[in-house]
Length: 322
Ligand SMILES: Nc1ncnc2c1ncn2[C@@H]1O[C@H](COP(=O)(O)OP(=O)(O)OP(=O)(O)O)[C@@H](O)[C@H]1O
Ligand SMILES: [Mg+2]
Image (cartoon, rainbow, N blue to C red; front, side, top):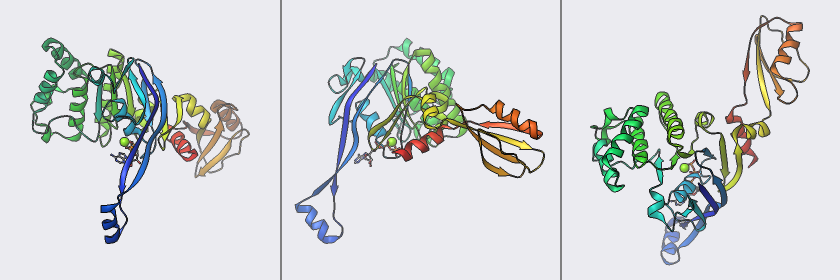
């Protein structure tokens, strides 16, 4: 579905030396500083996958998304969507993709939402019956129709992002690129957006590439993640496999009736405050049930819970390894 081969992009920035002297010098002999934003990235994404594209600020995620969606031209390498090169067949490829940037909008500030949609209908030459059907379908997931008469300028962030999502799906693209779609959204809007992504993926087999700093989005939506840093590929694989490899442990949180907490074999007590103790254990060495059984022999347990190693731990570990 999507083949990214040896993709690279540099940004050239004018480098100005400080002070008046530097400014004058820069006029005659401007220096340039090169930022290697994306370096030799290659990966493939199959139809119907939802892939989380993650990495710290400045890693090159947005730059990659922009090249994959035809907004930026790569310096080197290629992006094929359904076998077609995005730079060579831009017009046809763009019909197959939708893009949403959480921080920017493709809607027209001066129009009502419905008018913005109508405009897209004409641009993409979507037939009326198809347009109506798609809008009904998207409305059932996101509840967009009540917003159609609202001027885009007056919409809240959450409403605007919903509008952008619908706008990006009106022409029924096979691939949807989402760059930080949940940024700044409240919990219920975030929930609506995740539901939307899941449902269009299930209903239409839409392939989704999602960048986000919200690890909940990743956990909820993505079986596969790609981690990049400094423009380079760090990890590409199944989320739970990467989690198991990078952080092969869990923590059992035990509440006792008093403040005494016993040490137990095959696990490490990592915290002990008041009646509560935390036991960290390797998933391949023992199980929570085994630890509970050992503890119950020596003390009465009031309550237990398990802290799964969160994806946030993975990111922390992965980022610091870089
Ligand atoms: N238009 C631009 N001109 C010059 N440099 C740029 C431009 N856009 C991005 N960069 C630089 O390229 C690098 C990658 O930026 P990019 O926006 O792709 O990162 P990102 O992974 O999306 O980060 P974030 O998580 O903060 O959105 C950064 O060093 C950034 O400063
Ligand atoms: Mg970005």
